Image (tube, rainbow, N blue to C red):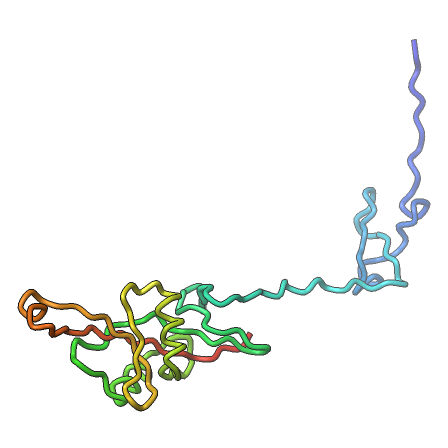
Length: 177
């Protein structure tokens, strides 16, 4: 028969738990398991809060404001992102005027940003590619205001080699990283 021996456990002070929470303010505080009012901290070191991870951005990624996707990243700069709005229908006319493009972009009320029309045919082609708009050809209206044109025809107009056009516009805005 083995008889158990009772041993008095060490005190919190004997284990090194001699500080109060207020004495350890700004330091990692380890509470004594026998008395939660005292604990241990290393006053030589301070805890440094772990910063939130820095998000990474890539061209073509969707961009969200308040968890709502507002467009796609068109360019990544050192301090800001250029976001292209989702292309939207402008008209079925033969041309799009600069006034129409400006009004189109000024009426976008997303993310608290100022939206302007794309500034080059290259940007328009990039947006058409990013949003996978099949058959879109980016053209300039003579004032270097690009918009996307998709040709289509009715049976009547195709026989005369006359195409109708659907125009889509995309605008851009800068957002700080």
